[in-house]
Picture 1 (cartoon, rainbow, N blue to C red):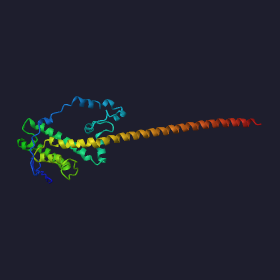
Picture 2: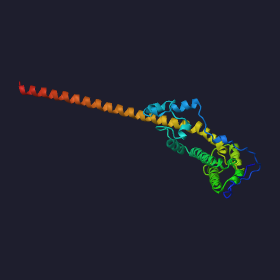
Picture 3: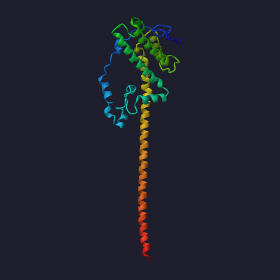
Picture 4: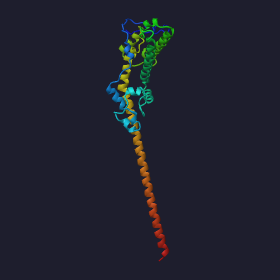
Length: 264
């Protein structure tokens, strides 16, 4: 039986969602906001895409130098591998909502991280859940309310059934996310599973097609340049042959003229 979900914008404690059954969700760990230390392997992959190779355009076609999908999403790509080009490609493929959701969820995480760290010293029991909002002062409660509105905007735009830019999420992922927010959980970790699903979808589908499109365009441009060079070479060769023919004809004409002047 389908689940009916309704959103209420008036409550500071968050949207009211009516479910047939409740799911107990443990509060996310504060370590979620701790800066992650990249592994040595990850550091090497980023270094291999260093700006030292920026002048060598042909090296970008090498699989070792092509940016990963995550690097493109962070706008770390060079040449044609930019976030703007990737967004334009997704728009042409009618799946731009995947990128829009990924960027919106990333922005939400940054806002939640900023609020969490600004409140933690004065209200250590605050954990981005509605039940802990009672300990906030007026300005902190207002900031938390703004964060809740951002979450509701994400749900209404990308997650709720029949939303304007509904994502291709499984029912399990969709219901788990809506249920968590219905219970007052506004930690960005509740978006993580949906975010990973969309990331996997782009990695398996859109990203390879984007790379293939760039490679095909480069090959087409290279073929056009070669054809133009061959045409110019042929034209120059024809001009040289034409010039040589005219020179010989002129010499022959002079020779015939001298012979006629001599007479019989």
